Length: 73
Image (tube, rainbow, N blue to C red; front, side, top):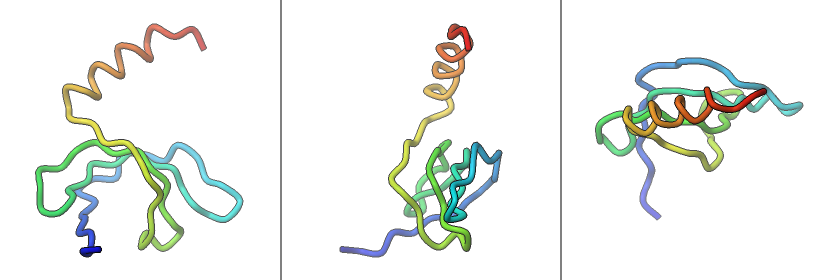
């Protein structure tokens, strides 16, 4: 499997942290030198490993925001 290249362009915020120190974050990430996308996933304490996650374009994130605003929490 080829190496995965990534660059965290902007750290937007932390959602939570588990007992092992992994942090679920919303970041703007460029994967394999492609344009950056909004990204939600867990990162290891040293930011060298990551879990599977979700990536969103700006338009997709805007639609998600609309949907989340409709939920009564």
